[in-house]
Image (cartoon, rainbow, N blue to C red):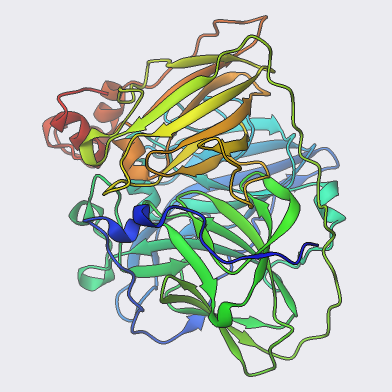
Length: 512
């Protein structure tokens, strides 16, 4: 393994969210430290050699975050966030999706390569209150840390903020042979990074906190825990880190500038490990890292920070010596040749606040913006037209595929961007070239993953089609149907229905 250690965040510092006019700085919560919550593994309903069956329930609940009143929350098979779901490559997966919320929702499998739009779970796959839906798919992608979250445009941000986000693990035989920690809850630990503002009686108030450039709160929640600690009982820890926030970037580093090793990104294990002292994640990005505590002794404490705010304190206990070394090469990443004759697809992300758009248009549920044949390999150039002075990093996400990052403004991608990705942060004034291939047909979304931006229209749709069926027909959700349903579910007239994303359309004189 290379001895080179990278010591910067890679992204352009003038575009860090700390420079936003609406930036909400994190504050260390003045509450006692508490054990880090590790979401348990969801038990399958049934499992055979070839098939696995799950029931995933979106439900309401109450969660004790702070002393005093419990917070009203939503979650998957849990009061908030969710139990961790495990899928094995090659298995045929059957999932019953149950909605026990007071309003419609969808179940989006962020990072899974599954057929769209219904199995993928974007806005066209609503599950209504008190109803269930069945999906099934055969999983064919490498081991990875992906996630499940609600995606009912333009209510995605509000529902994720309510708590609808859960980690999903994909496992395969290649990853299983690598020398990684994998004892869940002991040396294999999820870190779902989110932030919230607590109002009167410890409640969340999304509407009060609404900002079209992304809702932020001063209190960090790690796996739904405020001010957590974790007891380290092994020399090496594998941390599966997810930026599950609506808006916040996380600039992560340890006390003592402790170096750590990134082994995985959004779509799975990277070709080679990369050693870092600093790691920045934009919204929806994931990173798997291994931290070695061999230089510490029982009683020591190592803190994970974002900027200068502590997130998790790792309390070191006695552990056995671990001489495991990571190989210089971890996995092979496919590099298919671009299909001859295809032009470079150009995608332009523009605007801030209510003016966000893709290719000069706001998202329309029933409009198909692009087409690409299944199996074709095409370059996409993703451009962020914001200026560095006051502009934002826009995290670009694609449904239904994992891509590879080819270049940033014609130069090498960041050192930890050589694996499969489904989300990539694009700096102001930058063009990021990615290589895209769809393996399955369907209608898929691509968008900024600052969730208020996607709700506000910074989103588009692509049809992945086959030669045998170049013009498939899908029943697509429309805004009138959704608004009528929410109006009835909330018991308010249509003209009094509030959705943050719709303000962006109204202020621009547009309709979804």
